[in-house]
Each structure stands twice: as structure tokens, then as C-alpha cells.
Image (cartoon, rainbow, N blue to C red):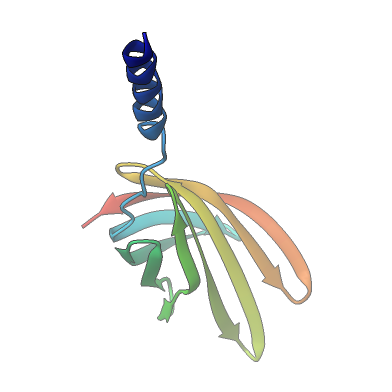
Amino acid sequence: MKRIIGLAILGILLGLGSTTVQAADATGTWKWTSERNGQKMEWTLKLKQDGDKLSGTMAGRQNETAIEDAKVTGDEISFKVVREFNGNKMTQKYKGKVGADTIKGNIEVDRNGETNTRDWEAKKGS
């Protein structure tokens, strides 16, 4: 009887272990298009993941910028991009859930003291 109970407990513990969230693999090149003022802009995000650490760059219309404060928690990533235009700083905070070939989430943009949020979806490219 003790052996059966012990095996049952072991089975439960092993079953619980299989429900943990595996870290996503965000490494790669991710692309998406956004529209602003009637103009389409293409974005390229290059990420390198090492455990829960994340580094990379984002390229848009004008230049390539390093991402900051980047991390991975399970299958979720977060980072920010800080750019300066004509003396004004703009901070974009990205959060997303990584799938096999997509990242879906939202962007929080702080510009001139105003915060706006919008959705983003990037697809893994070459």
C-alpha cells in the first residue's frame, strides 16, 4: 500500500513538472510593417537569446538602434528602444509572446509626455 501511494505521489510530481513553461527561442530576425500618417514602414528586429537574457537591434526607416532592458520570461519577451528625433527622445516599450514563427504583443510609446499603446505582430524572416 505504501509503495502504491509513493508511486502515485511520484506520478503526480512528474506530471506537475511537465506543465512548466519552457523558455521561448526568440533568436532570429523578425519583421513587420506598420502604418503611420498613411505611410507604411518596415521594421526588422534582430534578436539573440542566451537563457533569460536578450540582446539585439531594431532597424527602421532611418537607422539601426540597440534594444535596452531586454529579457525573456518563459515565452514572453520585453525590451525598449530609445530614439531621438530633432532633440526629442522617444521611448518604445515592447512586450510580446514568442511562438514558433511569430511574436505578438503590444508597444507602449512615450513621446513628449504622452503614452500610447498599439499592437504589434512580427514574423520570423531571413
